[in-house]
Length: 263
Length: 240
Image 1 (tube, rainbow over the protein chains, first blue to last red):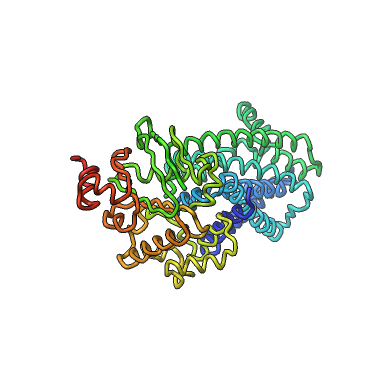
Image 2 (cartoon, rainbow over the protein chains, first blue to last red):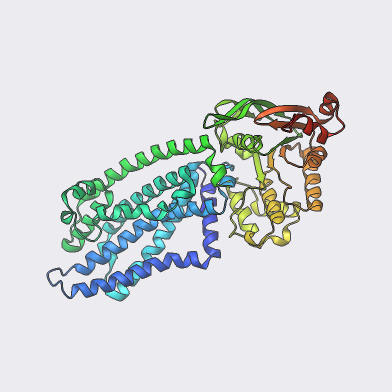
């Protein structure tokens, strides 16, 4: 692994943002829109939910967490698409960079984008609704850790599929994250799901994060059990992602796909 | 410097390259000719490690094998093609800076100035790539290919988009570097005159097979033809 090459990939993406107002706005646009739209809906609903005094905390916490998961995944897939659209993939992959270094560069950018999104959303949540997500303290970072590494695993898996099947499936870059939304129990507890969906939710690391987040907001208690369930699943999915990605990449080289989609 | 031995490449069980073998010596320019689909680009992509192959060997610098030693090889070679692009939202300088980092170029800023000068694109330094003409883009691509002081350069129709004057200048610069620093080049083109002008050795591909391969003069003598154009139509046209 060369830090210089990883930095090179990060720099290429960063230059794109420096030169493109729409890309910069995109970092702020969705978090701002989400927090305003859902925040006001939450305020409205709260009037009728006297039995749920922590409603704002549940909802805004979930909203911020979900957005960060989505940003983490997008930081990988959309950045890869930028290279694909620019027909720049060949030039990257005929340089001495390894796939690991390329992905590490995208992870670095993803982390950068997630950090900005967290700053924007938490500031707006505090200014408009008096909700301070940092009150969760160290637990916030433990939740985020699990969410972000799940987002990255989903991002790398999706990247592998796009790399293998090309532009026809690039819509997956936006769609795949939402596939996990109903099972992640983002805005409701897992217990409200039908039985078969509860079973699926057990295999989704994010569902433990959102359940854990609600426990912290409601009772101020952090469940290490939920944290370790989520972490164990994430480790399993990372191993699975790496194995699948390697198989897909082998096929990509065999079929010479980089030379077709990347140049 | 580079040796390809009995290389076979299949796409869906159809052979795209059929057991070809050749060598590129130090300081030599190997001109590769062939119709569309003859296997020129596939050959280059196999040599660069972005396309795997089923049989044969690709050896660089006597003992480095592709794909096993991919990283070590790619640190010492480079590539430019009319058909690939660079990140179009970046400026020329930013793009070269990114690739300079990927190749871990030392004294990167000086090096960028040097390659900009080499291809007469200093005035375009701060221009976004999307605003450049195809000829200017190709010169940036060529500048990128010189960033790591490659010992071997793989060029896929590098002058296809250049105007005649710049194309001539580029060829002269490449020839000079071959003589001065022993740069070796694999150079594909559809332009027979260009290959005749630049290449020391010629390789002609037809449907994935080598139909002619030798030093330019020897080939002309061997086939009893007057020039490369006549040779090409004799061995590579569909009627031949």
